[in-house]
Image 1: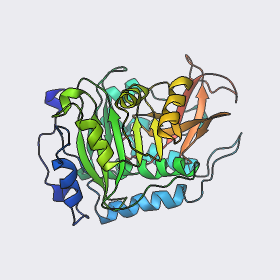
Image 2: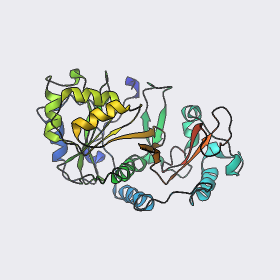
Image 3: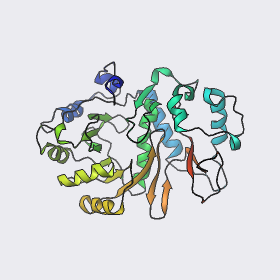
Image 4: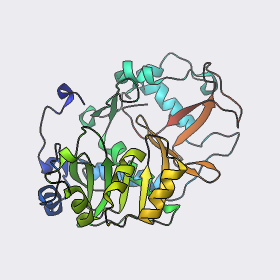
Length: 331
């Protein structure tokens, strides 16, 4: 992240966690003797109304997943498409036939993010994530607290496939995002959705810690239930040989080879889930023995020709086109 892209207004912890009265575990995570040199503060900012929307999202799509059948479209698609045409400037005056409606590209999102915001979105809830551009052009992704927190019900639905649940407790570290980079944002946070459970983002780069063995000691002390990261970070974690007992590892951002997957599962004695996601819309699918399994009933997935705006028959290889989601700031 560029220095100029950093936050300009500092929030208080009460503003970051308006529904959490007890922040003692957050302070413990930040101030522990083995803690890294955290360089950022983060919070989900969920108020009561927003939290209820996250829970309603889970109830609607994940308490009982209902996907569309081959040759059909989701039951929600027609209403969603009509709403987008009426309220999203980028989609207006382009027709109203979904089957021939032009697709958009990542470049459209990069150049015109403001045109993809619904006129009905509450601009007071707008948040902006600036990507680093390490795998392509830099991108400003617009979202809000609800679409951000909805990541958790999506992940819960994946873990459910492995009979795994996340503990909802204000003295448990639920998730740790493991990084192995020259520099990145790092922080300790909490999840209002998980009743105050701890959320960590740490960087294994030795320069981020006060002593060489602090990363290992910190992870062993707080023993996160779920580890997320990429294969490079997980390989660096293996080198530390931490005595921790995660319920699952979730790998994303790059290809997870079978060899690395096997090494991770042998050491941590838990499933290693290969997740496919995009910054623009988050989780999409995860790898299974018979191919990728889709996660989200609120995303309609199609395969288009790589060079032409033409939908391909089922089974043919092409570019993935995504319709739907729960983010009124990026539609």
